Structures are given as C-alpha cells and as structure tokens.
Length: 294
Image 1 (spheres, rainbow, N blue to C red):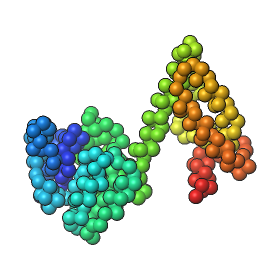
Image 2 (cartoon, helix red, strand yellow):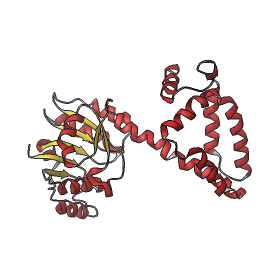
Image 3 (cartoon, helix red, strand yellow):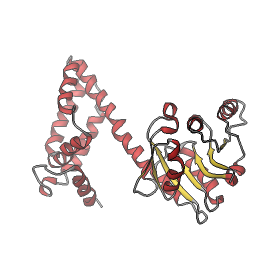
C-alpha cells in the first residue's frame, strides 16, 4: 500500500491532524475530498493539502492505496461514506470513523459486510482538534483499535483503547454532552431567576460550598441512590421551584423535566428495594436501575 493514512474528507479536522503528524515526522498521508474541485471550497482544500504535503487523490486511489482509511466528514454522512468504501477494502486495511456520529451509526458501520481481515475502529474525539491537532484525546473501540493504536500512538496521538464494542467511543462523546451541555442550561434557569431576586452572587457561593472539592465520583455517590430513594419528596419540592421560576418570568423547562424524571423514579418505589439510607455506590445503583428496567 502506498499510503499509511488516507483521509476521506480534508476539512479543518483532517488538516490539523495531518499537520500535527507531519511535525512528528509522519508523512505517509494522502486525502480524498469530493469538494476539492468546488469553485468556492476547493481553493482552501488545495492550499491546506499543499501546506502539509498531503497529495489529493481520487476515491478509487484512496480505497486501493490506503492502509488506514480515516473518515472525517460529518455525522449525517458517516454511514453513507462508510457504505461506499468498506465493501471494497481488502485484508489488512482498517477503516476509522472520526465523525461525531450517534453510537448506533457506528454499530451499523461495524456491521457493513466486509472482506476477511478488514478492520473497523470507532474513534471518539474528546476535544477540539484545532489547537490540539493530532494530540486531541481519542477513545477507540472496534476490532481495528489495537492496530490503529500500535501504528499511531508512537507519533504522539493520545489514544485510549476501551474494552467495549464499536459504538462505545461515540457513546462516551454523546453521553458526556448530556452533562456538559445540560449543566449550562440548568445554570441559565437558576441564575436568571437569582439575578431577578438580587441573590445571584449568594447563590453561586452557596453552590460552591456544596460542590467545590468534590470529584465526579463523590458527587455521583451522593446524588444517585439518594435521589432514587427520595424521588417523591424531591418531586414535590421541585414543583414549588417551577412555580418560583414561572413567577420570576424564567423559562422553567429544565426544572419541569426534572419533575418528570423524579416522578418516574418515585413510581418505582426504590425506598422499598434498596438500602433506604442511600449508602450505595453510584455504579451499583445505576446497574440496579438498568436491570429493573429490562
């Protein structure tokens, strides 16, 4: 094979990864981008490719000459791109999907019929590529994870193989967003109302005394089992919070969703099923919850 790494799509992410790898002395790269001849976008693609010494080749050449075929397009086309490439690969080639796609998409990609010896790696990119370049942390799942790790970790890529099937890496990226993108919405709801009541700074200090210095695991151990046990009482309290927010003219949609989640937990009567003191580590509590809902 002529190229160790071939990018399918040479946008900002692929360009930055290629630039970082080049700085490490890795040069066996090429790229295919279906927009390379576009009157508007093609000029930048060619400029970047020239800058990092990555030749632009045809899709047929990418399939024929690449050892590692790396898809960096978009989530909406991740499966269709994979479907157009994977069936044509041969023994020894590895298809890597870097797109921020739904984990179910990665599972479907892993299920595309392929020749014996063709491997797949679901790479969950856990940060921004510009700035981090090739050193952006990535989680790897799928049968191609080890060979990808062995070939590229020596070039400074921060790769972590997970003991999980394909889709697991993308699941982490998606599920991290539940917290990291949901938390700001809770802050908006709480802080807007606090500002209207003239107590924003005091609220922030009160939150700090409850949260600062605690690890995520400590918070989870404090929250999960106790929430399951006391869901009915907390739902009633949160209904009063909804009323307070609405009176202040603040959108209470996040708190309303909290009420619905608490009501659902209350209906399962967890106080009758687990230690009513709430002294249960969060992993056991979550697994108990999942087992009961099968």
